[in-house]
Image (cartoon, rainbow, N blue to C red; front, side, top):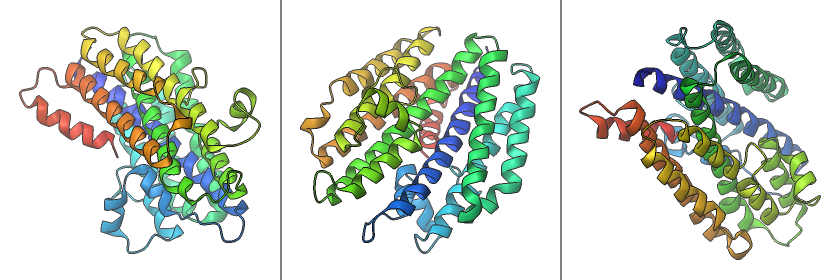
Length: 326
């Protein structure tokens, strides 16, 4: 398989996963804000911090108001991490893969782009936002389901899965990290109902609320939520599950030594994390280290499979690594 094809498959699914996770996060946060008690503090700027786009946002907007943040995250093409930009990049990557992907997959990705391009600006309005973003989530899930059912599970498919699970693990750590580092210190009492609502929003942003109640606890507590989203081996959006799936995918590829070594370092870090023994600040530092582990895994995958024969390999790895952290 050509390295160019592998790279396009990888980024196609990373961008689609990023768009879906951003849509989920916005909808869950919008719902939580409606239920917060009077006086509770939770700003829209949290969403910018989750995405790691503070500096870029400040370059183009003067204040962290809801309208500006929604425009930036949903339809601003100056933001490479906006939903519109991500779907556009996914479409451009898939357009060159018609000999690899099922024809119907290209048609659905193109239809998803046309839908987002025509409706994204309307999602800035809170009254229309939820339904438009839910439609984006459903259309993206339809694409992934089609690929799973109608594409040979060969080497090409492994790169699709690698992109999806690496992006998903990264976003999960970001969501948990921002709530552990920014929101938890505001907690006044152990069972603060405002904090329970916020952590419930975290679970719902990952579509994990029902499974958390089934397998972890009927009560929403910060330590239990963090432990579940990082370590549960069976829910498809936890960091542990994503790392295990990444290991299985990379094991199917040749020359997999460096990526596998780094993946196992990340797995050991997650397994050795004792949530109950950490302060919120320590938890924040720990999750920063996990995000750094994921960035190194990405760089190793890019070095082994995308840029191996290029003389400016180190420069390309650095550039792609920066792109992946958007």
